[in-house]
Image (cartoon, rainbow, N blue to C red; front, side):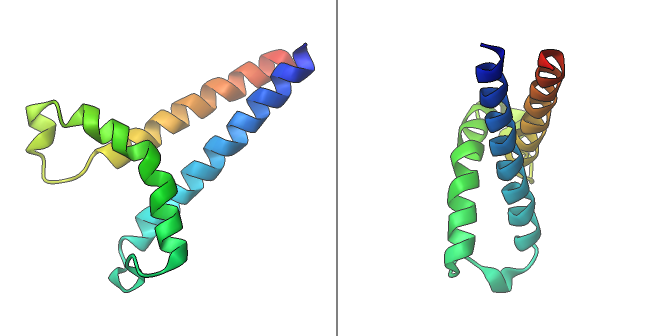
Length: 97
C-alpha cells in the first residue's frame, strides 16, 4: 500500500514541478514581446499554465483591492500555492520512506 501512495505522491510532485517550470518559462517569455502568442510552443505553455492560473484569478477578482491593483497577482499566488503543495508532498514522501 505504501508503494502505491509513494508512486501517486511522486507523480503528483513531478507534475507540479513541470507546471511550475512552465510557469517560470511563461514569466520569462512575457518580458520578450517578440515571442508573442504566434508560436505553437508559447500557445501550449500559456494554455497549460492558464488552466491553473484562471481559477485563482477568478477568486482574487472578487476582492476590490486586488481587482484595482495594477498587476496581475494571480500568477504569483498560483506559483506560491504550487510551491506550498510541493513542500507538503515532499514532506509526505519523506514520511513514507
